[in-house]
Each structure stands twice: as C-alpha cells, then as structure tokens.
View 1: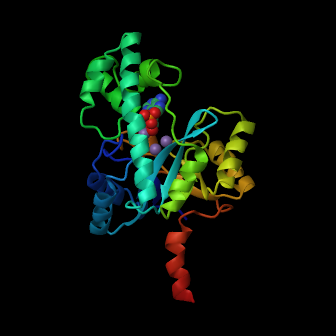
View 2 (view 1 turned 45 degrees about the vertical axis):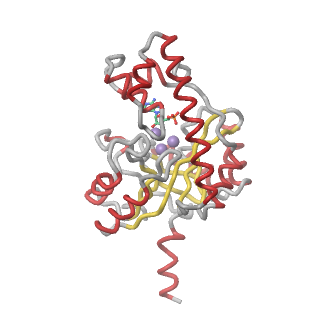
Length: 285
Ligand code: AMP
Ligand code: MN
Ligand code: MN
Ligand code: MN
C-alpha cells in the first residue's frame, strides 16, 4: 500500500518553490503519511522538514537526490534514510555544489552566446546555494526571455539547448557508496526519463544494482501506466526494491501532485518496508 507515501520531493532548498515547512503542510493536506524531502545535492531542508513532520504527525525519512555520472550522462540517485551529518554525505554535497557553481558560470556564458540574458539571470541567482537549470529557467522568465518555465527549457535550457551544460558529477558507483556510507539506501530516480535505448537502460539498472543500489523508482510523477509496468519489469529483473515519488517541485503543476501517485505494484518489495514494517514485526514477535 502506498496511498500516502511520497519519497521524492523538492523544497526551495534546491529547485522547489515551497519552503520545507510549507511543503510538509501541503503533504499533510494531500493525505501523505510518509514522505522524504529529496533536494538536489543538499540536506539544508531536512531539519525543518522533520520538525514540520512532527508538528503535523507525518512520518519523515531523510533524503537527498544526488547528481551522478554514468557513461558520460547525468543520472539521479535518491538517498533515503541518510544521516544528514555523515561526513561522506557532506563531502558529496560540497563536491557537487562546487561543480554546480562553476557550471552556473558556464551556463550564463553559453546563454549569452545564444542571445539570452545569461549574465542577468546569473545575477538573479546570487545567494542560491544549489544553482540548477530550474533557477535559470525562472530567472529567464522574470527577465522576459521566455513566457514560462516550460518554454524556457524548451528554448534555452532543455536537452541540446545552449544552457544544457553537463558537469563531471561523481560516478554512479561512488554516488551509491556515498549514500551507503551515510547510512542510507540508494534509489535510482525516474529510470525512464534518461534518453537511453532499452539495452542501455537495463545496463544502467544492472550496474546500479551491482554497485549496491537498493531500489528503483517504479512509480514517478507523471508516469503513464505502461511506464510503471516497464519500470516494474526493470526492478524485478535486477532484483531491486520499488519506490514511489512524485518529484514534485511545484504543487501548482498537477501532474506531479503528491497524493495522486499510482499504487506500487504488489510484485515488488516497497523500499519503505524497512521503516514502516520493522516496528510492526517487532510488535508481533
Ligand atoms: P540541473 O540538475 O541543474 O541540470 O537541473 C535539472 C532540473 O531541471 C531537474 O531536476 C528538473 O527539476 C528541471 N528540468 C529539467 N528538464 C526540464 C523540463 N524540460 N521542464 C521543466 N523542468 C525541467
Ligand atoms: Mn529539479
Ligand atoms: Mn531528478
Ligand atoms: Mn527530483
């Protein structure tokens, strides 16, 4: 049962629009009972999310979404149950933040070359700890260079556009190791969103499992039923557990709304069993 579970969410500590406390309040009114805040390369919102969860009577797992490199591409690995104070996680966050800051300069320069107000957008990012393309997209909208965020990605920042600048993120294996060393379990995020052939995708999932990954995000925000089936097949084939996460950045965008996720198919073991089933088993023993 996962009515009420959402293990992939963003706050304004990365590229979400809501502060952690406001996000948790929204989750409480959406019928979510167990959640993980998983900001990109940041643990800055976890303490506030945990406090708000206590206030609203929700169960909360500490999370993060780490950027990783696999065969020259960017993939995302969610860490669940991490210790936010673990030195390994601190090193991983610092390394990625440095990469993001250097990359933000490159994105600004590339946007300028392409005729967009990249430097002005960069100036609007002052004080942002984890600069992402989403921040650039919002800044370009504010500067009148695009009518909305979707259009800003379409024209300037999405795949193959001027502002689609890569980064030499730590590799997949190192990323899984960082999460494991921090007491967490690694979940490969939105496995169908990477532009890969079916064979490459199976290779990614198998390698993730081989490196110690625990679960695959089988149900992700906006996925169609056949996509859930495909992701389920990938998880079962690799012997991975299943996770569910809306990847919500903005509750105003209905397709990523928490509380409206498909059910995790029963064929796969829920990754959250380790947090909710353990006490039950302990009571039954
Ligand atoms: P970054 O990690 O800086 O490359 O930024 C990636 C983030 O941009 C993702 O986590 C999404 O939140 C957002 N994003 C990527 N592609 C799109 C898109 N086509 N439309 C809207 N948001 C997008
Ligand atoms: Mn994002
Ligand atoms: Mn992601
Ligand atoms: Mn995400």
